[in-house]
Image (cartoon, rainbow, N blue to C red; front, side):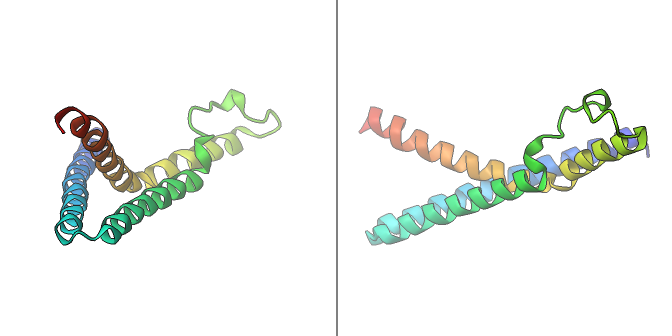
Length: 132
């Protein structure tokens, strides 16, 4: 199997995991908020929102710190220190690319959390404002 085929399979795997996580995170969020609404206990809804925000902040900061705030993305060897050898430059760029690939799984948590908050914001500020 060629490298192109392996890359396609890996991308398909990440897409499937992203879709499953999005449905799972959103469903759990809405169920917990619905439970808080049923029990008329605002503590639960506050706790759920804070938990999801903490997860989003934690995973996003972890991704950015691990990838060194993405400063290596888009660099070319001619933009690096001219005193470095070609091997050092290639190793530096390869390390940045390897970090992006190793941390790719974090995006399967970050995007579903962002989607959940986006839909919640649309529900609270647009749908409620128009229909209620």
